Length: 295
Ligand SMILES: Cc1cc2nc3c(=O)[nH]c(=O)nc-3n(C[C@H](O)[C@H](O)[C@H](O)COP(=O)(O)OP(=O)(O)OC[C@H]3O[C@@H](n4cnc5c(N)ncnc54)[C@H](O)[C@@H]3O)c2cc1C
Figure 1 (cartoon, helix red, strand yellow):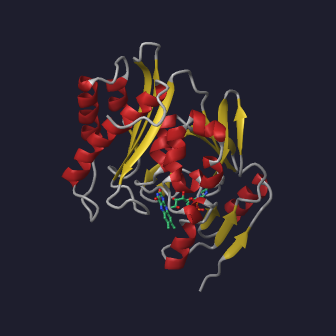
Figure 2: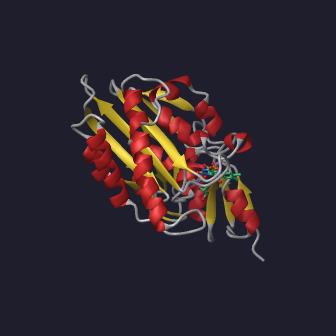
């Protein structure tokens, strides 16, 4: 029987060396709310666990060049308590806040949610919609990529064996911008999204959309960015015609599976409804309407 080693390095270089040197499967540990469940169930049998939480800067939030930098292992509860992030990125904060329970919130991270690579991960559509980038370190140095380039399939990412994410970068926020995330679940708490939707918009002084990003979760093998849905919004106010075209674009992009949470037809229909409702909240927020209600 192979044994499992645990290491908690205190520098990026040491963590990369450990990952690169492992002969078998090595897994990075942030909050452990996915990884520990997978270890206990026997689904994963790594040789090495590299806990990143002792690496300086990997937990924490700072403002830089007009945007925010969130350490990869920063727990959800810390993000949710940050006034600046709540003001600038309420959609991302509410998406992270939907993960699990208070106990899970004390540990769960954006990096773990993204790299667990579940198509139904809640914070990921909001991260995609925000235009966030991930700073990745590895033996070949540092690289920064748009977050949508990281998940490649259920449980799979584009990261090399010796790579891990150290931080996420959120771009500066233009005036009249707003984001939102909604998920549909059959229960009120502690369930996995049947569909999730993140929308991020910037409006001009007349309320016309000048920039948009729309992402859908749980309707494809990975969370997806839907440029056709964003194109429907750009150049328009959120009137009945735009909402109808957004609904159609979201439904067209949805390629879900049928499972116990919903059929293909049901998920496709919900994708359109959620896109409309999420866009309505994002537009309200961009227009300065707090706690915008779904139209
Ligand atoms: C009771 C319960 C309820 C849950 N509810 C939800 C929910 O409602 N919505 C939801 O989306 N999820 C939910 N989850 C899943 C989980 O909490 C989230 O996916 C969480 O964000 C994972 O973060 P973590 O820091 O705990 O990840 P970890 O478990 O530490 O890691 C998860 C994966 O990411 C990799 N990883 C971690 N950090 C890095 C890094 N820095 N660089 C590269 N790879 C890395 C790990 O190797 C592992 O493969 C729930 C889990 C539990 C136990």
